[in-house]
Length: 252
Image (cartoon, rainbow, N blue to C red):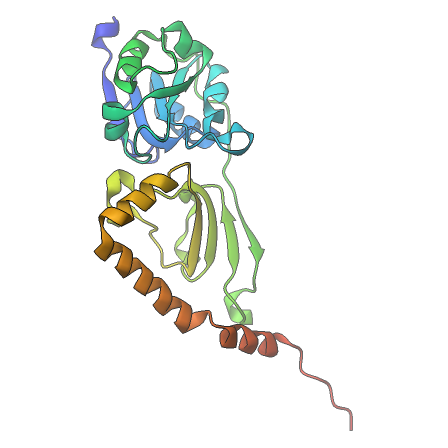
């Protein structure tokens, strides 16, 4: 029966086609929300990126989360393959963490992702759909546009919570900051004033990419300098500070 189970690669668990019943190798981080997306899509087993593991082991928390439904899951070392690129993970990834159900299939740390995915074809299907999980978004600072002042600051659990109204805002997003499959068109879909992502253990890959493409590094630097001079000098901050102060009330 395992021979009939297919292996599928995807750039992100938010952009899946028909993966039901397949072993899914997805470029997303191994957090709970990514695990939820993969299980919700009906994957038989799941391989994600450990995203550097991170604070409170959030980068692999999805592996334990999936044990509740008996789903085999593993993560590759973020330094062995590019995050946001399931095909690269399948080709070069090295397993760093596994859950109990993946271990039952013979998956262990140090295996190639391709071998691990092959072994997970023998995994039993999950007992049920994933436990409930809700993403969120919150305004944490700044005034609404009609009130004037600096841009609003919003915190988003993931890119899945992005809205058209986020244009012009400063966004702090729990997702990794990689381009999906290395494609620039997969970057932030709105014109935010600024965005902060989780580096997901991929800083070395980012720096290496810029060093190998100096024209792109210079273009990004020039664009950042232009935006800084246009909207974020000390004079801009001083003007906003003065304009935000309440006008004095002068009694006759």
